[in-house]
Image 1 (cartoon, rainbow, N blue to C red):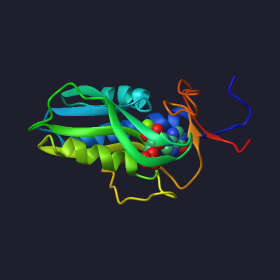
Image 2 (cartoon, protein in one colour; image 1 turned 60 degrees about the vertical axis):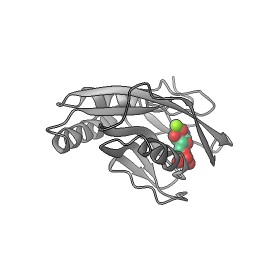
Image 3 (cartoon, protein in one colour; image 1 turned 90 degrees about the vertical axis):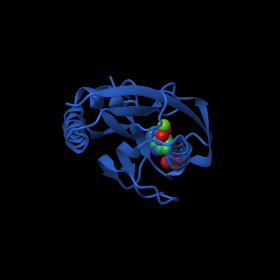
Length: 175
Ligand code: IMP
Ligand code: MG
């Protein structure tokens, strides 16, 4: 049973509806293309699995693992690649699949690093766009849900590596 200090924010049904919508949007926008989804580990592992299955176009999947320094709940802006993508990006239509954009530092850094590999196009898909603490002007092309503030867990999102396996998303209360 989920921890009692967790407050349900997005149910698995709400998440599934948004993932379906994103899959349809992406399939429409890339109707004549074969895309490469790049999931940002670990937080996007469930999202990318569901998103990939919501596509009706050919897709390949790869992963990148980043190391971000900062506290448990806030990133510092120093981001480096710990596990790189294995497929070449040059000339490909690439979509970065992220769990959540908060300050924006993680995605801004990754976006510029991947742009240097000369993909044909590079877009960003995030399950959650958290707007209240944005520090850099990063633009997500595809957004599942928008949230102003609050620390959330579940459906891939963790706090100190816990809760990633929960099928729903919860607000972590101030304990
Ligand atoms: P940013 O660099 O501040 O945009 O941080 C983005 C990263 O911080 C995400 O990839 C998440 O791993 C993590 N993060 C930010 N907010 C949350 C949250 O509410 N719950 C879980 N992880 C979060
Ligand atoms: Mg993350």
